[in-house]
Image (tube, rainbow, N blue to C red; front, side, top):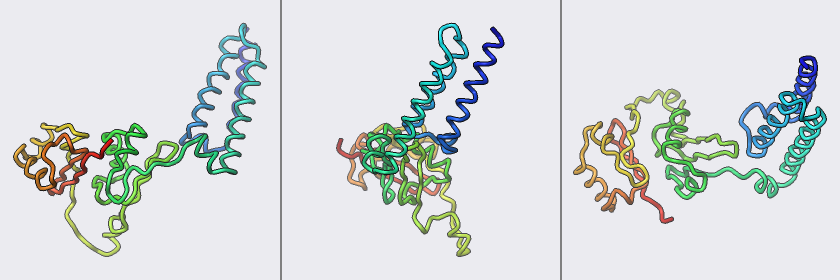
Amino acid sequence: MLLTLAYRTVIMFAVMLITMRILGKRQMGQLELNELVVAIMISEIAVSPITQPQNHRLLYGIVPVVVLLFCELLITWGSMKSVRFRTLAIGKPSIIIQNGQIKQREMRKNRLTLTELAEQLRIQGHTDLATIKYAILEVGGNLSVLPYHAHLPATHEAHQLTGKDKGLPTLIINDGRLLDQNLKSIGLDHRWLEKELQNRGMKDYRQVFLLTVDEQKNIYYAAKEAS
């Protein structure tokens, strides 16, 4: 029994190693939708002949893996030959921020929350939305951030310029929800908020999609778009 288990494990390990080698090094990085589906299915199929030898012949594990490998290679080939096929099978990138403005429809379409967007931007060292030319949600789930040329990381150092650090912005309004605690934490109140909203032609904070204030009291503001 133990020898059979060891034998099956070695065989399935070799099959999986060859499969992943054929699929390429990119499989070990960020997965696209079709790659994720194949990876999940292969992992389930490969384990069954090892853990349940009495119910699964070894061939029943190898054949599905080979079929999935063929399907993945077919999708990859089709994606290289046709942009339309790639868009249909895998999807296409979405522009989340354009010219410093959040594309709310794209966020809803991709079920991306403001909290998740802010987290991804912070990870890449961006805290001010107004400095971002484009932020693109790639097919694999990564967020590519392209700041304006004047705000590229090396700009100030290259020109020996100095400036005040804006600091981390505080989220005040999140998709029509007022965060009172955050407002108080930076020493501001409802009267200040009402004044700022009136200056922007807004009477109700529920109509605001996003409002942040940094340590220099600079405001980033975006009104809700019509659904």
